[in-house]
Amino acid sequence: MTISGARVREGGRISLQDIAKSCEVQCDTPGKKKLVQCAQTFRQKALYFKRKLILARRRGIQLSKLASARFVDMVDELAVSPMAKQILNGELANFKKKPNGRTWLLKDKLFCLAILKRSVKAYRFLRSYLTLPSESSLHILLQKVFLNVGVSKTLLSLLKTKVLKMISADKYCCVSFDEIYLRANLCYNSHFNVVEGFEDYGHRGRTNRIADHALVFMCQGLHSKWTFPVAYFFVSQTCPAPMLKLLISDVIKSLCSIGLNVCGTISDQGPNNRGAISELRREGGDDILYFVNGKSYVHVWDMPHILKNVRNNLMSSDLCLGNGTVAKWC
Image (cartoon, rainbow, N blue to C red; front, side, top):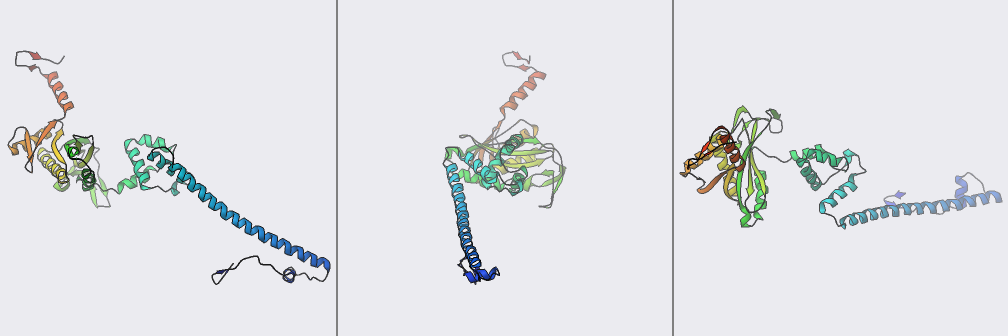
């Protein structure tokens, strides 16, 4: 009970007259007086046990908190990997909660997102046995990362932080590019008020043709094993050679601006790829090297495609060697 903000201790001793008055009993006989005295005694005992119960409940809550904190400390002391501790902490925090009431740390979502991107089936299998974030929660997190068409400033800024920590030898890299098939589709992006699905070359402009391929650029380390995507574009059927020549120059300039040492490019022997590289070489006046911002680069054709093209040519034609021998496909 509180009066004017001050706490008054409950359960003070009440006189026999007050007890008799509250019970509407007159202590005019020894029996009634003894009955009132018993009521006073039992009231004091009831208040005593009530205070003990309150204290016990408080101690129980404190012990529960202490036990929970101690268990968390035990989890931290386990001789397991950091990721295993992270999964176990998330399991303990969310197992008894309803699906809509579960809360996850950003590092938990990022770890689960990495699993989801490698295999959706594997993530669904793990989620049937472990308490993990839902796929919709991970997709919402992924939508917060804005990756515009073209050379991504977001990816370049992330790559720049990695480059600052690299030794000089690890900064040598090459740029590989290729096209991947996409299902042609148009959709309206209400957030940016734009219709997506048309041919898009980033700051180089868009066309009214529906895109069915994505042109992706990725840099790869030469001295150490690392790969990083840096740009993508939407193209219709295939990227024209004049546009591809400009895109190659843009990507190389962007990578050099963050401190990487680009040595060359890699692609398959597609007609437009050959045309773009030939145009770059012709502008530089060299049959092997091409130049961007005054620096020379070499283009290497992807070896599996070279072997495939040699096989295809041998299947339709014979190869005449200089000494008069002929190579045929058996």
